Image (cartoon, rainbow, N blue to C red; front, side, top):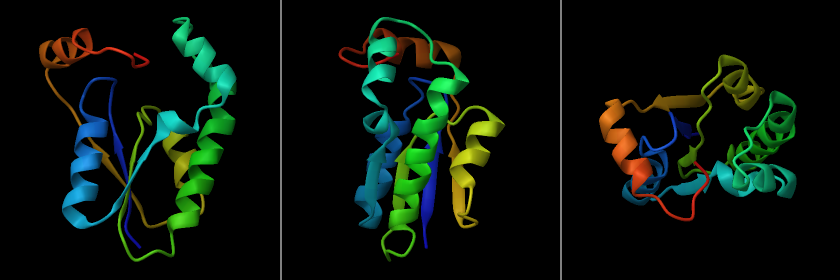
Length: 122
């Protein structure tokens, strides 16, 4: 079972890297943003930061989705910020094989990527 969370701050390249890894390995790409409930999406679109209470159900949904794939032979790559230890523990629950890939980059590089973004929650 190959389950991976590609994590890091907004703009570090999580989606780009996770998609590339999935393509290269014949795996499956999942974008955590697609699992946010409508209320979270409305908050993010309005520039309102999410609280932990906003995130718990979302993280549980991601964990459930990863569990669905845990018996599949192909690797799964989830792009998700997962910045806090408590979020990673929530994702990791019941999935001992889950591996986190932490992306980092210079602040200037990430700021440049964010400035060029359109149509995305930042």
